[in-house]
Image (cartoon, rainbow over all chains, first blue to last red; front, side, top):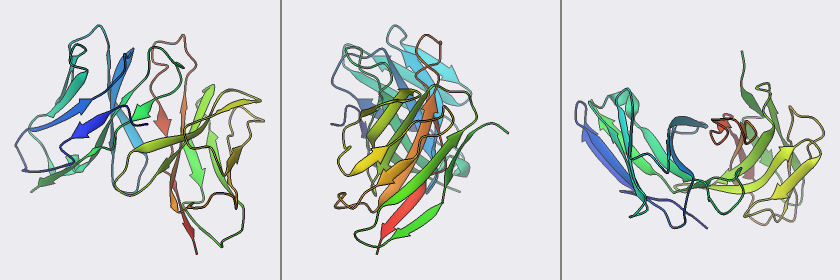
Length: 113
Length: 116
């Protein structure tokens, strides 16, 4: 079953604008991660936020986590055409195997030059 | 040049044939994973392995088989019992639990399997 669900499913913006994607999940987690996938390629890890953290930054990326609402958001600031990709959230399950991640269906981001 | 490789990039199979997808990593990771991705969908876990000579079924293991005879290698066989095998297959690896970044998974470039 899909633990994480991203929204929107697709997002189209102009270069220089900010992009915000959201992820909701169902069960308790130890951490939540965001991955990026360029078309037809493997996934690349972007950032991991632990359940006891509320916000984390990495370059132009900002991730927030609200465990009371079981939700996370990924903000990409000053977007570039090269940011065009699908973005997935992934969660572990604090009550289950430490190895398994559950991925959402992703948000397809298109940044127009 | 460390990383995780998959071969082939594209694979065509006739109905009723078994095919094996290769996955190799030189990251010295203990855990390895196989996922299936269908168009517009997220990743679904097929099998995972925490250590050599051990593996567990994921959410959609039916019609697939794996082996883990070496730490570096985790091949996936798509058998004729898999009724809808056309998909994009992704292999990943991670460090074992206990390491601060054990949850982060490193992905290969994928194999696109098409059944003719």
